[in-house]
Amino acid sequence: MSVFPRISLKPEVTEYLRSAFLNKEVSAAGGLQEAECRFQKLLACLSHPPSYTCVRASTHLAPLEDIGLRLTEELRKQQKCSSSAEELSVGIAPHPRLADVLLLPVDGPRPVERLSSEVVVGAQCGSAVLRGAHVFAPGIVGSPKYMKAGDPVSVFSDLEGRCTRGATGFQGNKVFVGNGVAQMDRSAIFATDTPARGVGVRMVDPLYQSPSFDGVLPGMVFLQNLPSVVVGHVLGPRPGERILDMCAAPGGKTCHIAALMGDKGEVVALDRIRNKIDHIRQNAQMLSLQSIKAYCFNSTQAVSDGPTHQAEGPPFPPESFDRVLLDAPCSGLGQRPNMACTWSLKEVSSYQPLQRKLFHAAVRLLKKGGVLVYSTCTITLAENEEQVAWALGAFPCLTLQPQEPHIGAEGMLGAGLSPEQLRVLQRFSPELSWDQIETTAPLACRADRDTIGFFIAKFLKT
Ligand SMILES: C[S@@+](CC[C@H](N)C(=O)[O-])C[C@H]1O[C@@H](n2cnc3c(N)ncnc32)[C@H](O)[C@@H]1O
Image 1 (cartoon, helix red, strand yellow):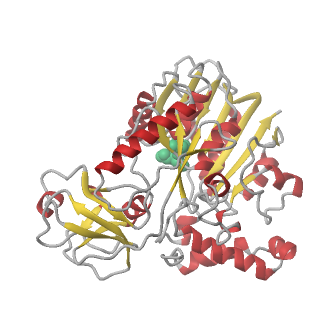
Image 2 (cartoon, helix red, strand yellow):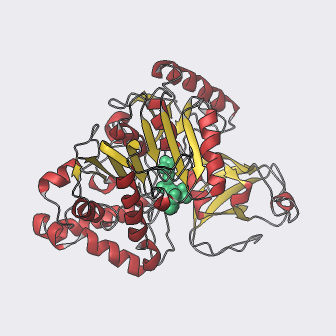
Image 3 (spheres, protein in one colour):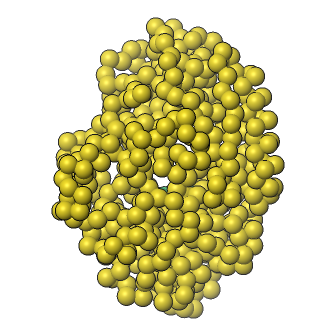
């Protein structure tokens, strides 16, 4: 059952994406009609959440089976505390190919009746609610005039960011994401002296029901999209190596890399935004990882001029790292659910130059014989296959490598790459099986197909 409309984009952005998905190579290979059909499915599936939640387990601390059992116990406790009449069976399943992944089913869309009191939240907060979160107070933009803690409310997501903060009603473009109970009075949420923190609305009857991971086994499980976990495995870090994560915050992949190395070696995490570095450090501490060193730095300038640079932190001499991850800043259009993106075409298409600058630094910092993984959470050709084609031309020392595991589809036609090159790329394309995925099918079967949109390329520097 489809509850949300397809993702709402500016017409110029829709046309830009259409021209990529219906490019000449694609149309010649499969026909224009099939390409249009794939594109329409893409727009529909992006506005819906995946049908499961993926968590990465800290298998450097305990066996997957033990973590699965402890998680089941914790979630059962959560259900007992929940006032929801309907119980969600926990049903955790290990991923058949990823030894550190647990999958949990999401139940939805469920028939939930709307209440007369409406709380309006920002689009990002609304998407988080659809993936199992409660509503945090900073995400609330509007509430009933006399709302008190304990009031039952319906929560709506403001798709276009039009609701003014503190509004008592909103008639704009909004979608219903479920019912909850206010945890604060309106006056506390919109207080001007001390901005409100913590849960503002506890969701009791969400449209999509999945467990809330707020405070659940924080050192043992980490919420992460499936393709993001695949990135760590594809990079293939080994104990004792020195690894660079160039765009690391909040550190999900950094921590995964350190865990895969058994916390032996060094993982250097860089990010340009200072307060995001604290998130990397907090996550490393929470997951008991000592091998991570995080620095606030612009990675386009992370190569030092001469080989004599002695300091521990960036910039680094050329050929300093065994493996480099470039999880690039990108247009993020693969994220699900995403019901509306208000970006202009200029914004959506602004990332290619920065990604190329980062690529230059990545190649220089990598040792000969080292591995470079480039990834994005977007669906555009310009940030994915076109970047690979450009990199192969710009850096003759790079060769494309097969990936293990290879769970996504192959790369998309249109950037002039050969069939062999496309086969070793990994493009997670939920639209390819959208409307064929049976929600009753075993979790492990649908998990690999019902992902966010994502892209991974692996190179070897020869
Ligand atoms: C896709 S996010 C990274 C997500 C992260 N790898 C993870 O798995 O948790 C991209 C990050 O790149 C950072 N960034 C953007 N430009 C950068 C630059 N020139 N140097 C370093 N970091 C940059 C952004 O601040 C953002 O945190």
